[in-house]
Amino acid sequence: MNDPVWHVDHRCTNCDAARQLAPGLIAEVDGRSAVVRQPRTEAEQDALRAAAFSCPTRSVRYGGRGPGAALDPFPLRLTEHVHLCGHNSPHTAGANSYLLRRPGGTLMMVDTPRFSAALAARYAALGPVTDVLLTHRDHAAHGRAYADRFGARLWIHERDLAAAPDADQVLRGTDPAPVAEGVTAYPLPGHTEGSVLYLADDTYCFSGDSFYWSRAAGDLAVAESVTWYSVTELAASLARTAPRLRFSWLLPGHGDRRRLPAAEFTRRLRALAARTAELQPRPVDFTGLRW
Image 1 (cartoon, rainbow, N blue to C red):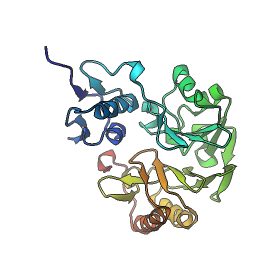
Image 2: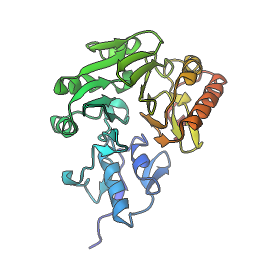
Image 3: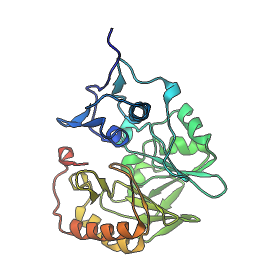
C-alpha cells in the first residue's frame, strides 16, 4: 500500500495563505495552489501542517484527510512579540490575523481568524486579550465574537462601521490616533473607505490589505486589482502616511510577511507611494492578483 501524500483539493480559492507557510512545497499552478513537492524533512512536514491549519477551505490534505488536531501549531510564534493566529476564515477572504504582545503580558488581536470557542481558548492561553483591532470591513466577520469571548474592545474606522456597527471604539478622520501605549492607528482609505494600518513600537506594521510584500516583484506592492474603494485615494493615503512610518516588520492581511531594516522599508514605502500615484482605476479582478 502506498503511503499517503500531501495534496490540495478542488476547494482551493487561491488565497495564498498556504503558499506563505510552505514555500517551495506549495505553489500556484493554473490559478490555484498545488503541492509541487513532497516533504523530505520533518521541518518541511511541519510547514505543510501549518499550511493545512491556515487554509480557509481546509484544502491542504494528507491522504484523504487533514493532519490531526494534536499537530496544530497555532498560534505560531513569528517574533518575541507577534504570533500568527492561523485558521484563516473563508468569511474574511482567507486573511491572516495576528496576536501582538504588549508590556505586562496582555495581547491585542489584529484582524480575526475563524471563530470557535476552542480556538479562542488557544489564543487566550497566551495571555489576556484586551483589544481586537480590525483593519477594514473585509476582515470584520468574527470581530464581535472574539471581543465578547475575550472581554475585549473592538476597534474599526467609522467609514467601515457598517461591517461592525457594535464596535466599542470607532476611529475617525485621517489623522493618526493612539490605541494604547506604543500602538497607533493610521487611517489609510483606499482598499476600502475605512482601511486602517496599525503600527506598534515603531517595529511592527499591520497593514491589512493596504500593501504587502510581493514575492513576484520582490518589493512592496498594492493589490490594485482588488482595491474596492479608490486606488487614487490609496495613493494619497500612502503619500500622506509614508513619511510618518518607521517599522522593520511588515505583517499584512494578504501577501507575504517581511523583515527588513527600517530605513529600507522607508525607502521602499516612499517608492510604492510614487508608483501607486501612477495607477489608474480599474475594475475589480481577482485573477489579476500576483502574490
